[in-house]
Length: 171
Image 1 (cartoon, rainbow, N blue to C red):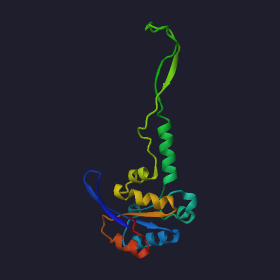
Image 2 (cartoon, one colour):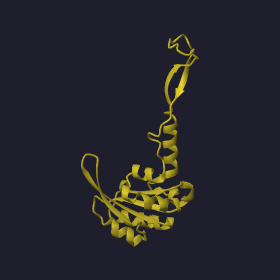
Image 3 (cartoon, one colour):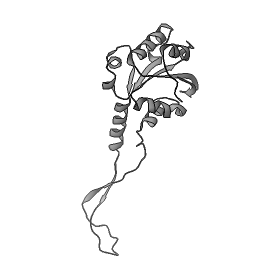
């Protein structure tokens, strides 16, 4: 489990706690314990690699589930739609002739890596996992683990609760 303070949204200080679990039932128990301690539903979320590999969590109405596979697919779709860079006439011009004639327009495609990062670590950082923890959390997710992420700005003792629920601490 990890704890980090982040300055987000106009200077609001958030304390983010992250616990890694290997079993869905332990995640559900952690959520129950956090809610009993006063955590609001919006303050608790679960990050999984693929919702199909987390049927208990995906079917629970009490779980705010974030699926990395879907986020990555969405980011790739958004990125793929930005490939066309412009339209220009495409015709053969004799050497030395720079006159633009009445050639039919064609599409010029440009590729770049801007916004194209969709690896697990990049997505974890984009959804608010502190960057220094993204490597360990990515390894856990890629190995089939589950992240329980808690905004503890209400100071309910999320760190202690995650430990009691059986969370492991990433490196």
